[in-house]
Structures are given as structure tokens and as C-alpha cells.
Amino acid sequence: MRSSVRLMRVCKSWRKEASAYLYATPCITATNLPLLTEQVVRGDKKWTDIHLHPYSTPGRWIQTLDLSHLTDQGFFSPHPTTIARSMFALSSLCPNLKHLVLPLGAEGGWEEHVIRSCARGLKALEGVHENTLAKVLRAESRCLKNLQVLSFVGAAGDGGYEGIGQWNNNQQEGSFKFDKLHTLILHNRVNDGPLLDALVDRELPQLKRLVITAYHQRTRAIHETHGNQLLSLTFLPPIEYPIIRSLPPLDTLDLHPQLLQLGFLLYNQYSHLSGILARAHELHHPLHTLTITNWTIPGSAPHDFLADLVNRPPPHLKVLNIDGYRWVNAELGRTACMSGVSGEKRVWAERLAGAGIEVRDCEGRKMPCLGDVRDAEGERGRRRASFASPPKKRDQSQDDGG
Image 1: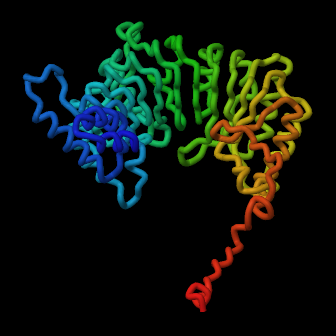
Image 2: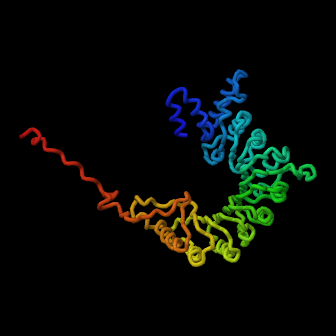
Image 3: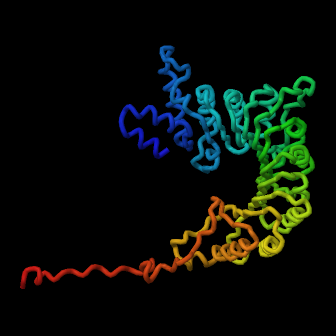
């Protein structure tokens, strides 16, 4: 975005080209959503049949709309009517929209209309409520056939489906397909119904990544049906209330024989994760990357779990990622890197390196090598807390020759 703004200031002829990049992925906030809508509508009113392109600008430049942060701004969140009015206007003027991110689980009444208006070109749909998605598919089963990423929120805490009915398998068989879907994300507990049945019964030939927060009998059916083709699996903590204390199945590796990446982001459940990884040796499982949660209090590290990885690591495990943690920059000095939680992680990283496992942070960076790095004193300069002495003033009498 900053590069596009700089390019717009170069000269007038560059402004249009830079605007296309600036509008491709606009940063949506509570204050600029109505302004963006006003600009798009104004551009459409100026568009005439004289133009060679059938769609107006800047509407046709917009490819991504991320509305996920509109409802979490507290007092400054826009009124639902403002969001609905803006989205009703934008949905028909953004023909090239590829990625739509809705407020997580929102049901404002406008979501269904917006999805159906942009469905033909959508490749990624995130944050949609289970009821809304089911209504869209029931009205037009093949409207989302080009989806590659789908993320929806279960309605278990809201009382389940609301009058969407059951699909007629004789009429819909073969028409409801996600042939291009490669990433599926399920938030909260998904109700037993036509949508979950469709995900279990229909073929998803391109599905490679699954992110899930609910673990019960019906979601287990998803693992049993599509587990053979999954390469990446992530277990997230539930966000629903009241929280359902359920854990992933212990035979996770049995259900996913080709799994390469496993994310286990459940807090204080390392003993359960050890039970899952215990099957890796017997199956000679190809698991390559494991992601765990971060610990922020010194001494709270999962010592038993990490010791098991050191003593008996899975046969093909090479990378351990720590979610939500970044390595301390080596330029801050040896003391900063080796103190507190950072030092604890470095000690475990060295022990795991001896077992052939590399520890990385949430950005995929390796542990910085300290080498000859010393504290911020001596040859590398003064400490931060010290103050440089002010320069001495020259004697004015000497300058005057006196």
C-alpha cells in the first residue's frame, strides 16, 4: 500500500496505474468503509457506454474485501445498518472480487445477498455463518463452485439451523461440488445437518488442508472420509461459549497417513499430544513439521513433552514451530537472548537440534546464532542506561588568542 501511495505522487500519468494496486486490497476500517463505497458509486455514475471496459473504476479493481475487524472495535464499530448499506452497494460494483472475509459468524441479513452477488468469481470465503452458507447453497447449489478456501462458523451456540430444510439428494446429487477446494476451516461446533453431511459425503478431490476447532463424532467422519489426502491439519482451541472440553482423536496419525504438517494449538494438553505422536514410530509416519503453542512464563515450558521429543523423536520430524513467539534479536546482546523465556527456548532448541529437530518461531525463522555477540558494553558500545558525556566547550579566550 505504501508503495502504491508513493507511485501516485510521482506524476499524473502514473496515478491511474498506481490506483489499481491501491484498490486491489483496501484496508477496511470503521471510518473508511462508507468513504470507499461513496468513491466506488461515484465512479460507476461517471461510467458510460463510451468506455471500452464494461465495468467502472475503481470498483473493478477491488479483489479483496476484509471486513473481519469491523465488529471488534468496541464503541468505534460502525452501525450494522452502515455496514449493510455499504455492502449492498459494493457487491454489485465489484465484479472481480476474489477474496471475501466477513466478520466472524456475523448474521446481519446482508451476508447472503453479498455472497450470492459475488459468488461466481469468489475463490476464498471466510467467516461466513453456518446458516448463511447453507441458505446460499440451498438457493443455488453451484454458485460457489470456484471456491478454493472456505471458512465458516458453526451455529451450535445459536440454536442450530433456522428453517433451511434438507436438500433433496435426488435433485442436488452431483450439482453441489467443491472440486477446487483445497483449504477447509471449521470454527465452533458444526451442527448435524445437510451442510455437514455434504462435506462428509461429497468428494473434495483437491482438499489438502484442514483447520478445525470442534471434535465430535460427525467431524470425525470428515477425518475418516478425507484424511487420506490431507497434508496439513491444525487443531485450534474452541471460541464458542460455553466451551466444550473435547480433544482430538488419539488415532489422528492413523486417520491421516500422508500428513506432513500438524498444528496442535490447544493449551496445556501436551500429554494428549504425546499420545498422538506415540503412534508415529509404529506407523513410520511421514510427519515433518509440528506446531505447538507458546509459553510466556519462565519455568512453564512443557518439559516432559519436549524431553520425549529429544529422547524418542518421530522418525521424520524435522521442524518444531512455536506459535506466537519471535526469537529475540541477537543485536540486543547475549544477556537479552539468554534470559527469561528466550533463554529457556534456546536451551531446548539446542537439545532438540541434537535430535535432528530444528526449532523455529511463528515467522519460520531459525534460532539466531550468537557467535561472538557480547553485551552492549566494551567494544560494541555503551549500555543503553548510560549517558554519553556532553562535548567539552572550547575556551573562548583561547579562540580569541587571549
